[in-house]
Image (cartoon, rainbow, N blue to C red; front, side):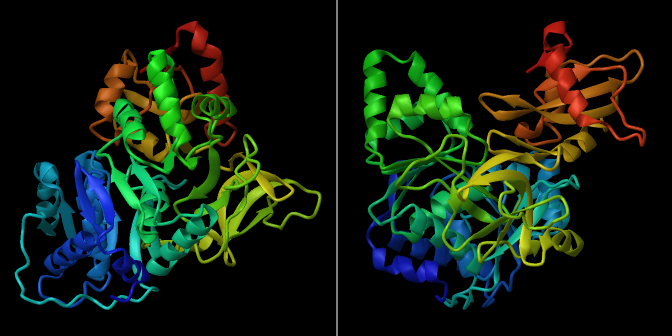
Length: 506
């Protein structure tokens, strides 16, 4: 073993690494089982040589076991969402040029036919290695380790490539800033095909020798019960989850509220990210839990870049200062670094935490950088080196419930509907979700479409969180002289027409 992650965990040996489905797994269990799975992946070869391995597992022990196995076998891990419809899975598997597909048994009927259709090797964990070899690949930190898909302004999601070295830099920065230790215990409830759940929670916990308490999915009652029953020290979630937990607290009996609040107070830190945290939610959660949520800023391409302090004042509506080892600057519209006294501009980031490339997209990779500075597309203002996010340069990226969605990708799919002539997808502010996906559309003559029909159809083409939940039927879409749809005007129409009966909501 040459990678620091696996070298480190040997010292934790019989400590519990993961609790999953009521079973305790030690670090020794994880090393043994990931090795056996790596040998299955290798199938007698000595190194996968950066072959892409797409894998689909619910949050639990097997997810980590397979992820580690891919890395130990020399492959590139491509984690995919278990709820994606077949059409989206086919896109991700094809775009990543996956060589192997691994899925939990419950998904075999959906996933195996896709692998067979593409002529790919399909594995389930019930199989055993066909070789007697016990040797694993000798992996160096600079090799590619993972491809995570993120939406971009070009429409289709792009694969963000990180090396083992980059992942390590992202982990070490957070471990230092948030003072992770082997005494920590954290609940995992976030999707494990996004950087928040993968790096901030799972990888940081296991790097530190901490305990990872994995729930298969988010469930309000189950989360509150684990907060009460488990001896947790850390909790990380997106604003939508905090909103739902707060709503459950508001309707609970007084004795239950008291028990839940006391459970939160036992934790040393609670963090919010992946979407803007409304100030009202920050204040409400502080009343419920006694914790002032630590808000931070990051994205798939850079890991985390900014964070409010672990110790010290956390300003509402702000995302703090640059994390250890990360350089951050603001630039004007021409890409010039802002001079002293100028406060607002686009965030650019550089450091060992920044991704390698967009998979198989060299032109887009070059366009994403200004020398070695990554152009985030997010606009912020800074005072005393404390940043506040103002928005994004593009109207075509929507953050909803912690997910990042390309409006252009959704539009492309919607245009295939037989009664939709034109459409424009926009973000509408929402207290619970941060932003919700809304669509204004022009229908074919004498046709009708309601939100329920649209959503039922959309869920066969898109991941559920990408399907619009607001619908506005219009005669024409507002356009400029060049025929480009003016999306800010559509947002105004949504806001103005809510009381006129033209808005159909999910």
